[in-house]
Image 1: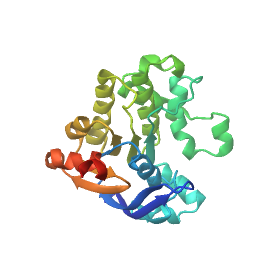
Image 2 (image 1 turned 90 degrees about the vertical axis):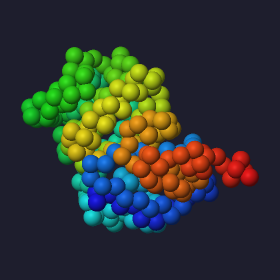
Image 3 (image 1 turned 180 degrees about the vertical axis):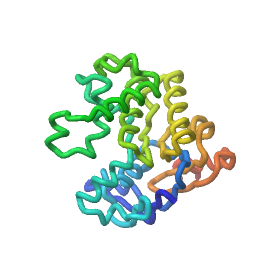
Length: 250
């Protein structure tokens, strides 16, 4: 078991309870999609895993280690093995594609060498290999603000892979993309899981995409998990439970 989340809850300062005793586990090499309406708690759940958001209670165990008990040094070390891909890319627009990919190594650097952009020749070669893997080697020296949305997301994938992660968290990676670009990005994410044995946990709005790509689907609504099963078990009744509010169901 690579990841075990046990009874995590999170209430924000405005009183909004985003998560309510959420528990689930993910095996190494699994492709798991998390679906649910906007505001259901999907993004908070992903951010609790890598501690970008700290849960109020519960456990987040990665490779058997409870990340909530890590000090800053330990958490930095463990975060290196957890890549993150964002809906809005989170790239440095003025920098080139290759420079953004190399940022995936910053977790392994001292503050000084990271700020000075000091990378080894092996790291630079690895960045080129990863750009080639996602079909962007010809754009290595193109500024990221000149790329399309789909290309930017593939840069995000390559950057995450530079961390040599065991787990990649993807927060709505195709929400801003057209259908063609969405398919390309999802295909690359699936290849990562199958060919590199890297676990992917992906937040999605598109139910059909989740069904087509996932080994397992987790449904979240109102801060709770209401479905956790194989895609073939996700029927219309389950989808209604995930996406319709109690008021609409009455």
